Picture 1 (spheres, rainbow, N blue to C red):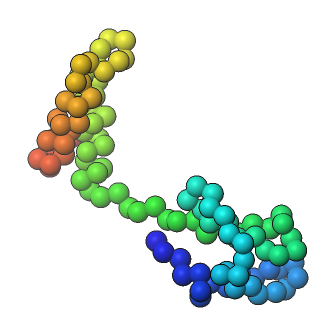
Picture 2 (cartoon, rainbow, N blue to C red):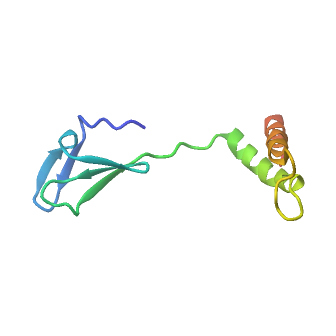
Picture 3 (cartoon, rainbow, N blue to C red):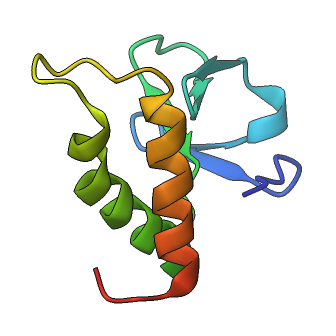
Length: 101
């Protein structure tokens, strides 16, 4: 998601003032953009990027991987030799085949 800062306006209810977002100091905090309003350092406004919706394939793949991963692990919980790679391949195969999990 792209945020057009040229058209974004921030309203400060403390002093009833409008600010153009492009004129405010900015900082990135993870996936959030923090804008600092002048005169009041405590007021931070976060513009958060919305995560995309998971596809049907990725949901099937996640379920398949959770279902198959214990088969490729040792009794103590560690992955067998090439177990992780094998589990990924098997989960991909199952997710692509579109069978019920």
